[in-house]
Image (tube, rainbow, N blue to C red; front, side, top):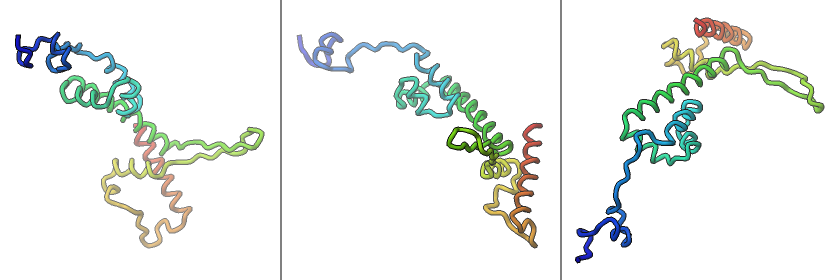
Length: 168
């Protein structure tokens, strides 16, 4: 019998180290890791973190995404869920703000300060009002909002307008 690769059987091919001659094992249509991956992706929006927690290589996820349209659709749905959660949190930080607490050495609260994310607010405003998208800076015309107090008052009014719009 000729021992050439053409006449190789799976058993003697494996003995010689020819990996291509091994019989193919069929994979189940639903991978064990996909449920965990999609759940973590929906919670975090982070593909790398989801792959790590699901104990799967990123290349495996990529391969599955390119070869399985249903998996790709479910992955996009998970990303949409994460986007919605992040958007809600961004709106909350911009409109309601966050409370920073300062403590003394004994651990007692000495002050609380509410801070708002003006950067997020401006990005949200740009999404709602196309005229704001093109502006890179606030223009001051004829002394409008010339003082810091006037600018803060205008910003608070805009924050209230966006809060009313987001609630509706």
